[in-house]
Image 1 (cartoon, rainbow, N blue to C red):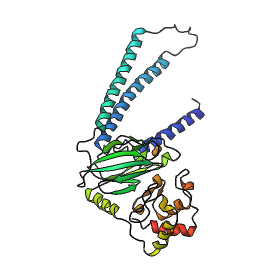
Image 2 (cartoon, rainbow, N blue to C red):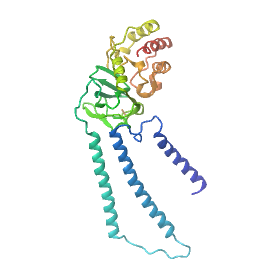
Image 3 (cartoon, rainbow, N blue to C red):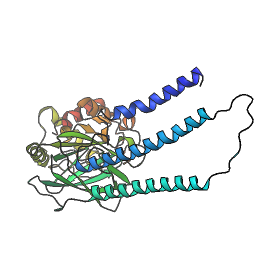
Image 4 (cartoon, protein in one colour):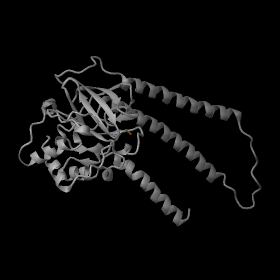
Length: 341
Ligand code: CUA
């Protein structure tokens, strides 16, 4: 390789490898830091398959490099004698590869059935040993409905640590795929069908989730977080989510009026008010969530203002239209929305 070619080769290798390595330690979704029994089984399978592939790679490339060096042509040598295959060798290496692939297939199938197997006693209970959440994929955000607690939220799924969380996976429009790599397998969200999956997280932490099925323009911004917390914290959170919105006071009053005199209530719900539409995310506790709009922005006032000013500039293709609000209206609305905690 010339110096120039080698430089490009190293640069490209770095570009490919560095994100792969960093993915394991930053806040991005990764199956390499499993935090549930099911995710651990998947991780072990990844390691096992990787080990088999690594051995095969080293063996084949080793033979190749050995042959190239050992049998290279020397100046003045006659052309090498030609061989036309060896049936015994060909049969052996085909059979060995077929057996290795068959073994990987059987082991993968075992892991697939094992991680899909829901623990008994499906359903939820309010004591916190298990909870039940309906997960609905929308273009491009996730809705979380807690039937046992009677509230709906978006973008942020909360669950108690060491509890079985039963999930019904649904879609409001096109096919999406629910995936929290640290907690278990993917599950498709299919319109008109309810799929079931579950997880049990062993450690309190915030896990990153994403949509893993291409579902349109903003597929990449269909992220969510899973907040796994001690039971008391989860119950406090759930209690707060159950509260209906109180009438606005102080600086939020003008914003509340602006909200209800604009087209906002045509798409959104704020519990305890006349806004009861279910097209966009439920806003009852919007300011208590960290992310909005599928993770493209936070719920901080300056981000809310950017979003209200022109959603299409922040997330082109998003179903929230540009309402051409005046700067004053935006400030008022942000003052109101920031009180929804
Ligand atoms: Cu939803 Cu990709």
